[in-house]
Amino acid sequence: MKPTTYLRIVRSSAWYDLLVTWPFATPWTFGWLYDQLARLASTAGIPGVTPPLDAMHLLLANLLGSAVIAWSLARMLSPSIRLGRLDAMARWLFLCWQIVAVSAGANAIILLFSSMELLFGILQSLPVRPGIPDNRRDA
Image 1 (cartoon, rainbow, N blue to C red):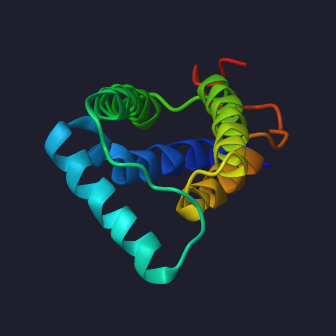
Image 2 (image 1 turned 45 degrees about the vertical axis):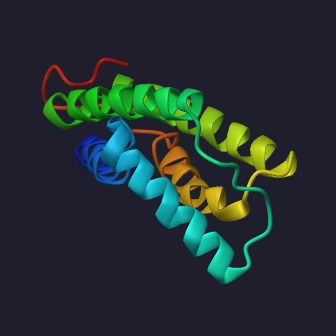
């Protein structure tokens, strides 16, 4: 793929992450999101357990949301092949842990997020032609 196309994918994945994970960054927004996801899973009859939200879940979700916001901004402001490759690695890890969680009984609504992890993981793992026009190559 052309380097410019790859960098557009890196930036697009960053925008997706920002849009999807910003509610994870605060206790108030994550509490609301968690309730909505639990309600959707229950209404749709999606299998798996959605445990009550406690302080530890909230803390871990807020830490994740904060880190992903910073990571998203880094990829938006300075997209590079190196950041795209690192993001691909993170997506493969997230996908693995989501599958492990669902296999262990977590609510399968998690798999809604997994489809985008898979898509951006594949796209950001594809080969890039040499010849990026500036210092954004980093690979």
